Image (cartoon, rainbow, N blue to C red):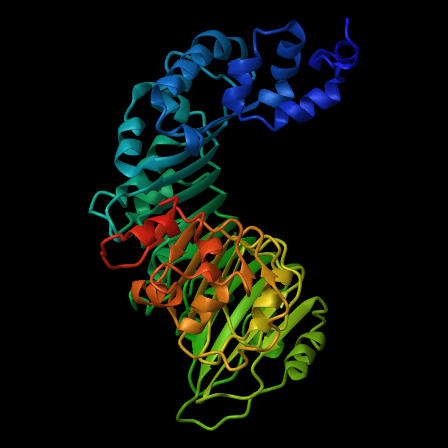
Length: 526
């Protein structure tokens, strides 16, 4: 026996705690297929009820094209493993590929939570009509539906019916998460059959949903007015609402409300504020909004209290990020300082709040961000040049937009304050004014994989793609105007931008072009 043999460690020599830690890092499918049946100790650890009461069968992106192998793996799990554990499974997460293998003839008597992810809407509807699945849906109290339509930018007339179909199939639901989107929008649920919908969701107490319009939100609230205690909504954009929809009836059952918008709204004062005033018994409120105002002032602590919070006497938790964009081009107004805005919160006993605001209007326009600390949300939208920094560990996406230039220093602040940033979009046609400043400070975005610099001045293409200024070691997705890409890369020969382009796998230019030999060597992963 050699020295190396005596020093070798057998995996079975490791303690249970360490093996559990190793197993927890494995994909559920891989863990069951690779470890069950290998050794009695592995069986005991892997089939521990605490570990497998929630089974997740979601195909890894790297395995999508290897369908034969996946089918073989899932067949073995269905035939040899699931019959051993079906009576202790309480939660299941499945995708299009795994669903038929996980259900079939197997019954899960304790199953109460079910999640469908990465489904095309038409396939999901077909699965809903399957008798085997319907039998399980009747016992489900917690359901997550994450589906999409392949049609670009719109839904057909049948898509909104999916929401009601889900409610009809799951009569015991108390907690529903429903995400249905196309490439550019969320599900429109109008017109809802409100009496019918109210009847079939009389037990629903929590709803998380993405909606296309504010009208959808109002219709949904009016349909669920007697049951919901928690409503979490993300709306694409808040536009003018229909005058026919009731926005006055009190929502006395609602205890927790969250409202997030993807884009700015002109209708905060006329639509959002009246809705919030209906929630007399609210205990938790979350707002993530961008508001455009004309001839008015930034939203501050005084306005929030006077217009919203004083109507919620039971409120004990308020999480928010509200961006105000002033457009006072034809009206001469003074704007408050950052200290004035901060004091408006201190006066109302809000201590953990941060402010970044333009204290002078440029062309009659200015921006103000007010947000609770620690910052709660995964995106920071409409960041402007007045941003001064902070710590934002949860944020994965930032949108930068302004008519004032973004200097090198701002990108340095962002790289330090957003250490886990993955997606960055910039909209700014103003050239940088301090091009030589801070060039000795190299910026690195360690986790950034998606960069959208299509609507920018060429200075920002150089700022982000030149490895003399910025390092993007994980950049794989780039959206850019083709003409600017050609100029900055000097027709794909510039060595200063070559490194940051070397791993790009998706390049969107919104223009067809013929690849040159230089292009192919510049983007070897395309």
